Image (cartoon, rainbow, N blue to C red):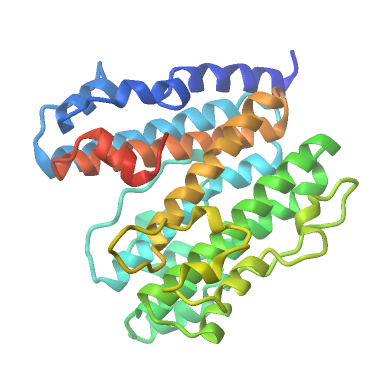
Length: 350
């Protein structure tokens, strides 16, 4: 068995033991945060209460997910660049959280994922952003923000949006650059996964910026990731020679309070439905959850459809991240005295 075979066998075992697919059923009927802790960590549950238990459990959920992902990727003698890039998604996420804490003048460092030898940011230097990012790929990327902090200026919500946009762009740019290193079938699968994810990510940004921050069309367009897929033997036809920001740009022309104007838009099915007696308006949270559910099913299908491939391990990482989000969301919901079934409904999980 080659490296991909070992990696897939280990990944399949982990997914089989997870709370994904048929594993969803194990979360049904959970009523308290302590029940959830015992279910997820039968040998490591904690005798804590309320928010303290939620925070501790979320840390354990994330750490376990990272450990499992690294254990699978370590099956490779030399891990494919696409997969090592995916591990860096945890670092990108933690970096966003750190800047949010710096902007909010929070002294405590957020929970940081231990990605071992793949780590480049010196998080131990928090809240000194300049020291954290010295000699990393992020130092030049966020040079403007670092200059502002060094001069004593506070980070504004606009700064944070800019930081998040730059980090997202660099992350996805790195993944797209890895496509040329894949085989034909792997490349075709990855093109669809990345194209749909980037297109949806752009649409989520557009809806959030217009709805929550009242940004104009011109202001919103600046924050979109304007990628095109590279030429390949088989290019995902919907996006051939077309910007992955196209659907988001099209949405900027549509009114946020008139559902009929959205008919025929590519991602129309992810919009919140009309409700009797309530005036309709776009709900970005609903759209984001529905899009996440779609990407979960796409990853789940391709994980099983193309075993022993690099794209299958990419899908495994996406599935573990989905499970992580699911479990932490259920924990948060239970802390607010919601049943797991109510959280499932809010997350559009089925």
